[in-house]
Image (cartoon, rainbow, N blue to C red; front, side):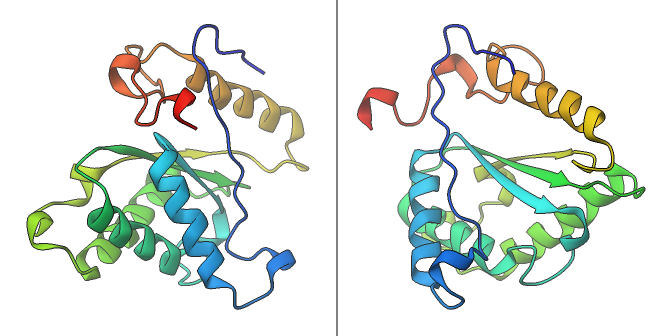
Length: 179
């Protein structure tokens, strides 16, 4: 894996929307972790199974709606990279998966209640959507490892380099010493 020389990185793995440890109906915890992630993240990575794109609950649409609404209410206008990592990519072209995902996100954005100060704001005012698809871990293991390493290296790139996932100017929303 790439080592980000000179760029400290904090990675938090927050429980997904269907973790068995907390039970089926603990959406309060889910919302709290989503809010914490939004407050601390310059990049919010959403790990999604390829077959879940277009599904209502499995794709995390209710949680994404909550994230969007809270982001509008609580935070000032700042862009967060919203990185969807689609795992177990099928033969469906990435452009089509990306288009379907974008349609879902635009539909969610159109339905959320927006505070007056953000009434005219669009999805792209708050989020920089990025989509990466990784091959199946077991069926294409070597290719998965190669592409996962390439994704990891994007976090180590200088913010001015194309493909970097670091915040512009190298300044994080929350300084690491603030945590």
